[in-house]
Length: 165
Image (cartoon, rainbow, N blue to C red; front, top):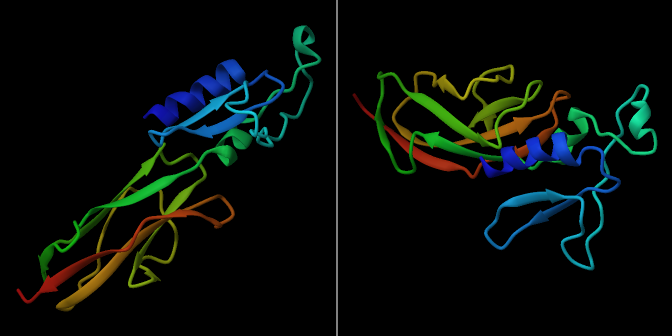
């Protein structure tokens, strides 16, 4: 949630700044600022908005929402089933994921069961129904894909078991 707030503030308040710096604090929170957090910091590269600039800020750079999305880091995790959970074959089994700072329009998820896509096309759904699975152990992970299908982030593999009904 903090990262989402930081991106909103970045887009609204810092978007006109000359340079933007991305910094991960000791608490693991990503922050964006127009001031270098330390002497070794280098500004991130953002694409400027296309089109005319407002007359009052003709010398400043503006950044598109797409460029801000590209600068953001995604964290994705499997929420269900939980690690080591035992599910019954023949029952309704759901895979669920969470994405931080949130799944952006144009981005999608690919659910992977034992390294293979569960459904052919990526989806923007945070949960899907798993296919009928035979008894055994399975590995589940979820990947965040951009609009061109490039993987931006992937969850850790989580193992669960399907038991006989």
